[in-house]
Amino acid sequence: MDAAATQSLIDIVRRAGDAILEVYETDFDVDTKADQSPLTQADLAAHRVIVEGLTALAGDIPLLSEESVPPDFETRRQWRRYWLVDPLDGTKEFINRNGEFTVNIALIDNHRPVFGVVGVPAQNLVYTGDLQQGAACRHDAEGVHDMRGRSMNDDAELIVVASRSHGGERLESYLESLAELFPAVSRTPVGSSLKLCILAEGKADLYPRLGPTSEWDIAAAHAVLQAAGGDVWAVDGSAIEYNRKESFLNPEFFAVADAAYPWRARLPEVV
Image (cartoon, rainbow, N blue to C red; front, side, top):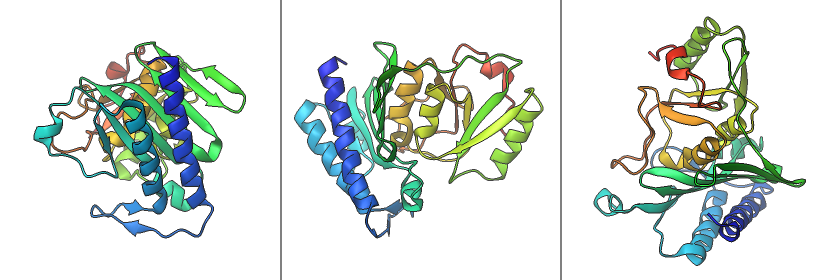
């Protein structure tokens, strides 16, 4: 992605964030979608900003958003490159007003995210990841900062990020099994796709996701994390790929900050 296109995408994400914050500062209503997930006017306002921006930037590239009506699989399986968008990931965090919600735009090429932009409107923060350039950056009020996931070794404390809104007994049991294998394990609760960006920033090591997510939830942050030297894979060891099937649900997965560490040999089995 060239510098001008990158800046345009950052601007789109920031404008979507501004639209979200306008709603965030009001006494907003919460609706429920068919899958029982929450929906606010902020989701829809951000969606409209992003669709308008991406259409103007690259109208020839198909766009799939959580808040759009998707084409059938027979149509979209023909796509080699497309935009995958979650206008507001972490709607529960938005409703709870804890600031840990994100705006997400990913460019998918041949079933893999190759570029991602993740905005954190409440923190005036944007993350970018460009796999072609091998560059991950944090864009904040002080400027642009290169990011790299922190290195892991057998003697280091394991810092785990986990969901604020999803967890359950399986996750708790898995964290207990990690504590038996690593010298020390600490846990940081974080909402939305921000968890993968925390890994990319070098502030944590592992995110075990033992529960459902959709492809648009993680695609942009997946690109950011990989560009920062991390990785994401399904708990069965297979790669996470996009637009391979009719369902948008991801398999359960691990995300790690240091792709060079032998996680697959080290991590306990998920049951």
